[in-house]
Image 1: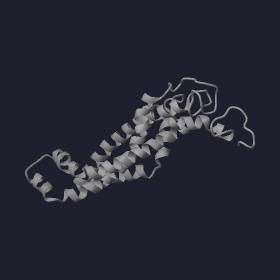
Image 2: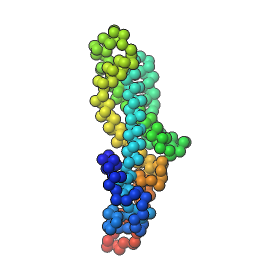
Image 3: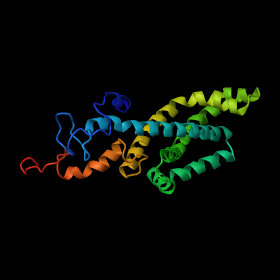
Amino acid sequence: MLLAIVGPYVAPYGPSTPVGAPNSDPGGKAVLGTDYLGQDVLSRVLYGGRSILVMAVIATALGLVVGTAIGLVAAYSRNALDDTLMRGMDVIMALPQILLALVAVAIVGPHAWVIVAAIALTTVPRIARVARGAAQPVVERDFIAASEAMGVPRWRIVSGELLPNCLGPLMVEASLRLTYSIALIAGLAYLGLSANPNGANWGTMIKQNQFVLAVQPWGRSRRSSPSRC
């Protein structure tokens, strides 16, 4: 994450700046060599995580907000609403994240907002289950009953009493969901479902340059001798 944030500011070249022959050796202007278009690999690596990280943070934040709200409401309601909400979350969890994302992108198109919305949707049920599990013991505590007896509105009990007592588990789960979101976005880019197919993106870079591995891992354009392979 630090590399993705700081990388663009220390990259020696722009992400689309040609600096030499395609698939050239490391050295000279290109410390890590060049890719199949002659662009600096190091610069593209430093730029490549920014878009992934931004999209992952937004998707995780949306999933955290919606999932937390659903989980807290379900735990506090303690009635049929609880069962209805959580069964709906179970249905979403039964489908693989990558499958839902692929379906959404295939129907609407590889737009950034579509990818973010699809990943946020798949994050919601996992956050909701953690929020509900953390809130259930709190709901039974005396200060919740006292607030209800005093006539405190339900939304204030949920936001002012339940939420602060569940933040610890929610923050841990959010950090895990963020890592999964980063991997999923990069995976979609590797499959060619990136919002910017020609932009610097770690998943896209692997897809575009993987054929060079059959010749030389460093991306060498000239034929290597058998002894050096």
